Length: 300
Length: 228
Image 1: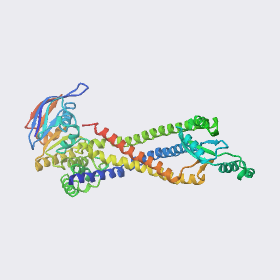
Image 2 (image 1 turned 135 degrees about the vertical axis):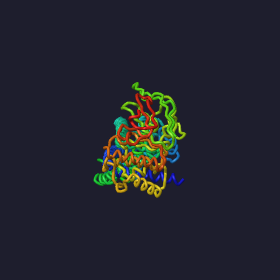
Image 3 (image 1 turned 90 degrees about the horizontal axis):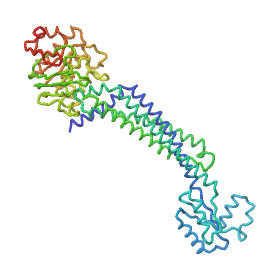
Image 4 (image 1 turned 180 degrees about the vertical axis):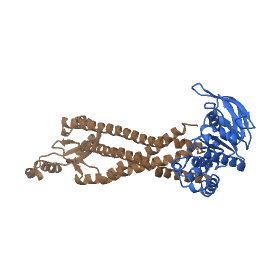
């Protein structure tokens, strides 16, 4: 028991000695990891936003269902709402009475329409229907139109369908680029650490020669790998923390319009920061493990 | 005790490094192994410290069948076999003290005990004032003494030395051989020393095994080069 504790302490000691006495080597590994993680953080921020924008735009899409003029009773309205809700692609239905419709019209077209307020209101009651799958919006709109009591339904026409398709494509390309970059960064980090350990191959062989077991030799390298990964992720996380907050502030939380609202800094820093730190740690540790295991087996 | 029973080893390139070698070395013996380059001396050492496995035959060191050891078990075996190399093989980023301590730390020995052991060893190899130096700050002879110190720190029953004086001038070689003799006498350690150094073999006469093209051509208990 005591021996095991001693061994663990010595292993930890060698992890730190390894960093201290191979400082330049470790620093170069750390800087390589810093650069990869920095790039990855940047692309993740962009990628997450593309996804966010696409989702935003799509979730804003709704079908405007205008009811017949004579549908005024609650019973009738509820019956139609139930029928709409029963359609497979419908996510939620929002009722908008004719006063609200008028308000929306005034908002959109100007105060001149205020004269219709009150008994004179020529508009009908309506629904806003939100769908689950935006690509099916056209079909759903047609289905709703066939319901008795519905006067018309509109979703914005073919330009909306095109926008949806475009956003879907952008999203897919974004995912692809991030994935590619992820693989590239992992490979880069992996190689850096492997090279670091390669230069110490001779030491590994000597350690075995004087009675160091595989585990005793391996663990300090693994701890070092994890620490190098951790140190390598510090700077990118800090850059993300300060940089993104600044960007958010300068752009006032949105890009061009409120449709492209930026994600809260806290959320992004947490998400992306966690991802890149984890990648640094895991790849650092795993690459070390893999490389030492390989060099341990070079000689018997 | 070291028993080498009908051991043969050939390399993939077709060289027969050892051919049916039979040797028995008793506890506490001091033995030279001599022979020209390519005679199989290094192969013999590598088989003894478990680095390579013989094609045929058995190598039994203190009851351990060395050739049958699994890869991960080899380090445990080596803890009882001290090894000294021509090229020292010290860990370059550890000090003299730490290099010797390493061989004890792998055993899980306590810090206090290690400090005492290393001090004793440093005294024995006469490097007390160099304990904080790194290997590259030492001369060849000093480095070799560190290696010997590391090899005997765990008080192994067997010490294998592969041309320990190969890179040293005659004066330093003398120092090393005297140190090995001291270890042999003090701890009754079995010592097997591969060497090229005719002068040493002549001067410090001991059992001398001569290898030639992988065969044991002579095994003289009288010792000395001329007896061959």
